[in-house]
Length: 105
Image (cartoon, rainbow, N blue to C red; front, side, top):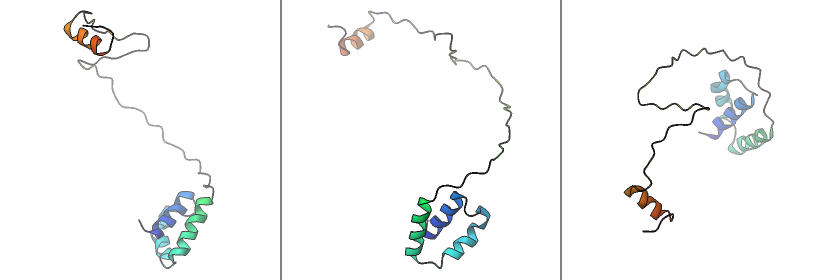
């Protein structure tokens, strides 16, 4: 991105210029020197952002359907998930406990 585009895009982001005029603004700023553009960019960085116009967001109604899938565990806030109980003396558990320092061989 060139310095000209950065200045123009910053002006658009701050609400100083319109997005529709971007191409013409780039053409107008192209004749300016790099130091002038850099000064403009520094000045724009100090400018507080213009207050955004209140935009009305359209309400989106979800069309997603709830589909029961196999092998899916759903956790509700009230129910605890069911865990398989691992025997405490299984070979795997003995190794894990030993490596974790909870048991000595």
